Image: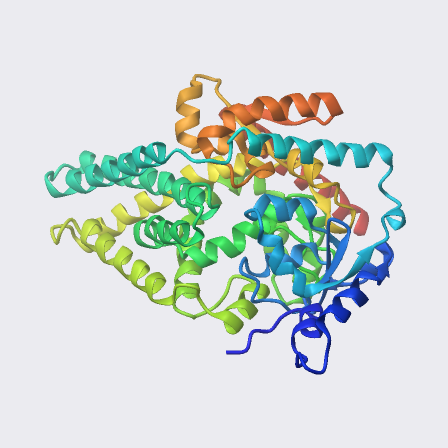
Length: 490
């Protein structure tokens, strides 16, 4: 099948080699200069220019990018640092075909000498961490984590198989919910390619821990999560761009900024009940936890639709599916089918439970998992700074100011927090270095903390209790601002 690529790639790759001198094409591109203002005009997936180390690339319409549509989150922007965060060494070689010219550095007016020195500083820090071996994984650590998770699953199954006690079954459902949460962290590590250099092995492990054990589509998760990492807590520039964070696209149920709350007018124009939207925003500090309980049901639904071609979670994902399809179509479908098969056997008590009892077991396990998962990643970003995509700060400041680390406290010891959060207690450090194995994040954190102090960049941390209070207070604050805005409108 013919692979589509950006216009830069078309210009360099489609002409017959006999009639076009490829060296001349490269020479022509090297002699072409662009201003920052010109780059900023190309911000949509259909017309996407990106900058890497002051070189300009035209990746328009390149939905076949190996990482998916995440590449369009930086259309019309500098992708140097997010590229380094996501890619193995040497990956930039694939970009050569899209090269169209060089950026005129002096045209980037928002970067003074101090900013340039700051960017060089954090790039040097990354190089130092690479030299220290901080991106190398311990296979023994992950063998332990995988084995421990399977023991949790076996225990939950045994509690149903060998017991007729309601109390034991309740404990089994809660343990299963916790097992799913821990599977989420393992799939997360494998699919961020923290464990294996060969990305295929990470994908296959992700299918096991994602599709088979949790019922989540690997490709659905990667599409959504990679986009989040690239642009955390950003609002889309416009309806045509894809530079917003999918994880805060929670309207009409939750609004994380006044701007997002005000978007209810757009929802009203689309025919959604404005009374319902206003009610949800007004009481969102109280509905937050009930919504979290139902989160896993939504993720299961989106995953099933993705795996079986019944729909997509976003417009970008829909185009990507039409162009490329699933990366592992048979394994994804089989994994999710097998997940629901073993789950049906367990939830029905191996044929002993009534329909109502089976449904209750399933909902208790599912809702508890949604809460366990969302408590951790909700603390990671919810209630932190949000930005408009067109005014985003540099890579380091964006990742640090939109993210919260989780510490021990309020009766929760640090070792418990470390286990429960699966590495995301160091959410700031993980967002700066997403391919760094979780067992190295504590060491990296000390260097990140030192660098932030040196440059006057504040990062935030809170324990499980204080962090949750901060999230609820932020939701209440947005609600109050929204109600005041509504009064002004009328």
